[in-house]
Length: 294
Image (cartoon, rainbow, N blue to C red):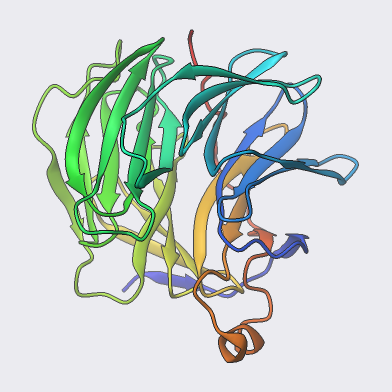
């Protein structure tokens, strides 16, 4: 029996994203970032002052990584771009693949500074996507034939990677070279969620190695031990909870994005907070995301 917890947090941002995803936090600026993938927006929130900015994007962005104080890396349906913080200028950096029918989806920076980034069909076509390893400008395909890649995150020591295909609902683990973020073995099933409600979606791994996973379709964040044991479920007041991120000066708070994608008018009335961005309202032992190493 896992521990279940009612929602005790707050709405961090009232803007209802069609597909809120890819949240991250930059401790140097004190800002949280997340995307509305379908809306082609990058949301920026300064947590101390709650000052909000929304940046229009010329593509479907889904992942943001800090490079340094002046630059960020954005993963999109048109490839990887360097975003210049001062003016929002975008400079092409690298291509993941040459498949215009695909878009980017989940991704995260490994402790080595390399990036795992993923793609999927624009209509979630079966087996259309893949997961890639990006080291500088070198792009290596890791896994292909994935329908909806998600849950990409890494153990604190960089020795284990986690991911899923949400269409299969198998949370996977794979041994990695901590120095490079490249796999050293074959992926194994960590937790078989195929017979349970909701889809395994975005995830982060905390300082103790616990995996915090958003469950799309059931409005929850679930917590796993590194051995795959599920130990807790925290309610989120939006059915399509999509991805968590550690935020705050101590990385001890948890932000969760959500979406109203594919909801008709009746479904949206029944789920009035769909698409909003939340703070879970509990203390966590998070950690800051590594910077992407050029």
